[in-house]
Image (cartoon, rainbow, N blue to C red):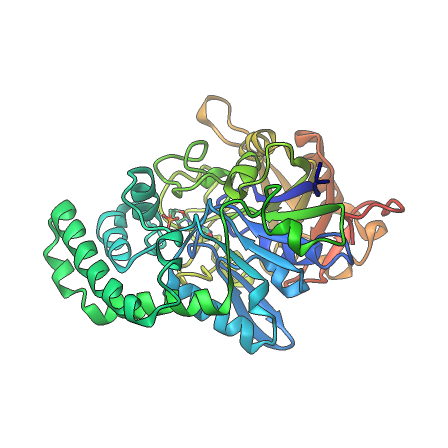
Length: 437
Ligand code: IMP
């Protein structure tokens, strides 16, 4: 019998309302020499955004996993994701311009495509939810409704420019008819063929510049076994997009995204064999809390006192540029998220933002009994002198202790600056543990 490659997957998951800095943590983990072979996204689409600086140049990753920056052999966009070909093309062009090999990006043929129509529907119908307007909701809705378009619907045409041209036109007519009939939207008349053509051409460009992965990519007869002939096992770093509190089922519905963000969805959203083993779940949260878009936010600072935190933390969406709402850390919510996600180790980010120049004190909500939030207060701290575990003292130590005691999980690493290397282990690093820097 053919010997199969053993697959283990770790998951990085956000525990608040997104924007916790997961991308930076995933990037750092992917850089551990020889540890991961594959990085992957299992949910969401261009609603996510992760800004990185590579050799002085800014790059925003939306759907390509951060492992691309660590030059992993496979950077997989899994079947649980949705893509907008126009936006993905732009992202891939930027990646190419920085000198990375775009053929290491594998796009599953089961991924659903956001069409120009879905963008319009999202903007028109989901305004009250404060969505990113990227067409995420309508695309997942059409997937569930079995009326969506998948990458696999196109791959058969890409080698024939003649067939391609007629397919493009037929598809345009068909799509516009479906959407006009379904939504009775006059504004669809304004969607010109040129816009659809740009979309179609971007898709063709993608099939030539990145790799398209078959549905069985990770299975015994799939391509992974041809790529890794030199290995008996591979380790996948799965990057969750959005976060537990925005999960379509377990978040603050209906103020949520349209995909499932929990680590338990990772093997489904990647198409892993059922026998693949779950490794570690790495939960990421900010030392305070933010939310972009509408929806409940129990610890929100409504009196403008969060404005300095917003400025200091550069709390503006990397996808939409929107100003984020600011609030204090919410331990009951975090406890819920950690338990659902099955977090093994925590990373706390943006510790440097809560400095005395930005806020006099730092509050943490530790109880919401009877609907009343109760807080504990700490003096703001100067994290610029925290370079290693023994530097963690005073009010920041007490803050960390409260979080760890409440959650019963180690906050193994804190992030005290925007750079990928601005990370400090809170405990001496055990020998031979591959997860830590
Ligand atoms: P959608 O995912 O564009 O449908 O937006 C649904 C909700 O999720 C809105 O409140 C968005 O602001 C929020 N959201 C979606 N993606 C992200 C993200 O990557 N970070 C933070 N919030 C997000």
